[in-house]
Image (cartoon, rainbow, N blue to C red; front, side, top):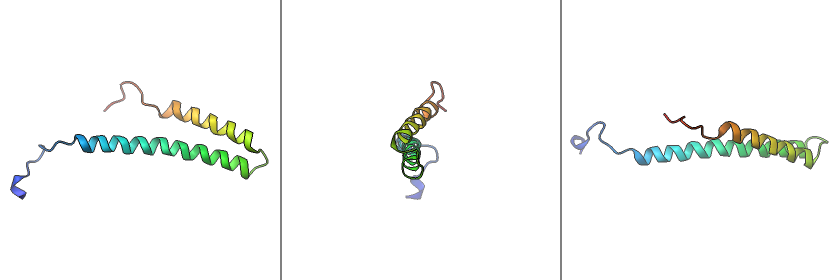
Length: 76
């Protein structure tokens, strides 16, 4: 069995696709958690309330989308 292995001949398209999905879920999941933390912190831990918390969460989400989106020509 070990003699059947040839270095550099394995198709890695599935591993590449899995890595891309994992990185995308990590990136966008982190943004969602951050926006939720901002919302709930301002809503429950300060006298600001729900509306300022929701506005802040939307602002964080929009800025995060602008920063985290895929840039054209950024492929490695």
